[in-house]
Amino acid sequence: MQCNIKDFDEIKMKSNRKTRTIILITLGIR
Image (tube, rainbow, N blue to C red):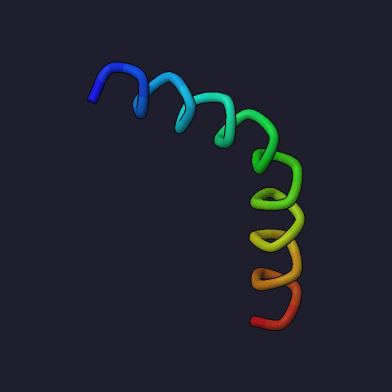
């Protein structure tokens, strides 16, 4: 579990930019 959490955090950091972009696009559509 701990190792998975660490990997998840790394994925989160990498996906942060994509997530922000998706959020901005979603808000733009609305």
